[in-house]
Length: 170
Image (cartoon, rainbow, N blue to C red; front, side, top):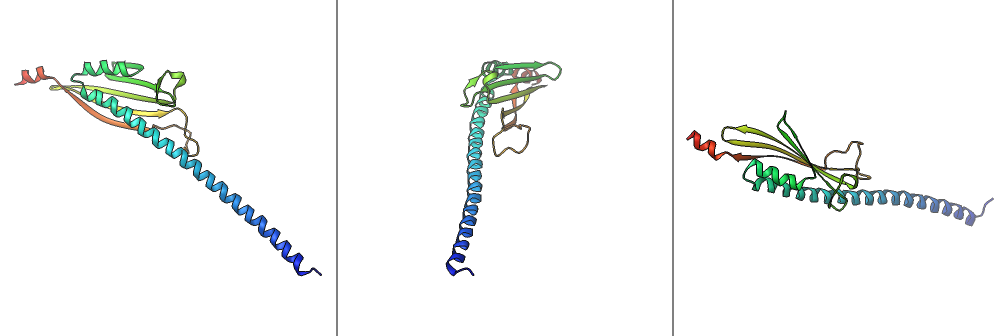
């Protein structure tokens, strides 16, 4: 027959093991939450910086008076440019490192890609502009799919009036 003190010791040992197990599970869950929060905050900061960079580019486009002025500005801002004559579409690409400094393709962490499609109208040129930012590697803990979608994207239009064509119409 067991005495009363030995029964209490066995129960205490089981209680200690269970409480350590519960605290270990809670610690794993909390550490996972902290990791998710950290990378969510990093992604949010990246979106903010990407939006500022993209907005700056769009302000340069908006400040130019002609399509040719826009092309000159964008050729200076972007590392890679291409023109597709069949679709009358311009492609621009610029690379950034992890601290959002311009870099080459080998060191890139972020990429800003822009395509502009121009359409000639009687009164001028209208440009359909799509600009988006991609990250080369997914964020740990918060990216569920294997494909890397754009971090931020903006679609807009810009109109360049042709004052000579307007005068001819009057």
